[in-house]
Picture (cartoon, rainbow, N blue to C red):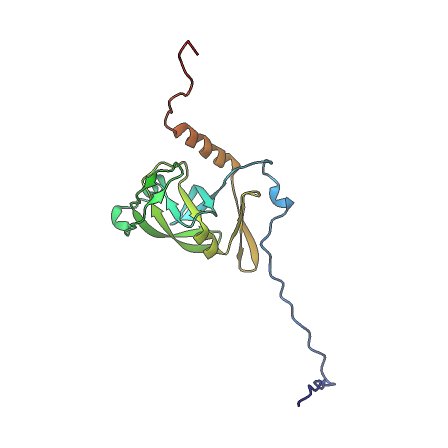
Length: 194
């Protein structure tokens, strides 16, 4: 049976000090609400640098597993069909209709000094957004997003960086989406007998 022996201290040296590293924490506080109109139900819309261009109207959708690129961005980046690789799965749009993708493309997406390669599925459908980034982008960046605080936070080195969403742009996109809706037939009866 062995008994643990206390380590002998060297009387000529100081005891070793435990070195504690303090890691930044990705969290949100009431300070993050400054500049945001509350209460709100706005989506989180940010600007990202995609393929070297500042791209506005990028929706952060933490409920989605796929990154999407819409026609405005596809054309704005001067992409061509030969830049795409095949993508065979069909998607379900916000309007409930099936969308057949044109293909997929991998592009660098920059947030501050951090760059993440993102596989965008290119669709030919109307959207007030230029692109959607989702869980794969958030996870690759090591980011945490909050629709309440309208921010994305991530670590860059030993600093917490943040991307701030725009309520103004989000609300412009909402209006554009409503205005784009096809006119539905009125449910009100025009019969004089009712």
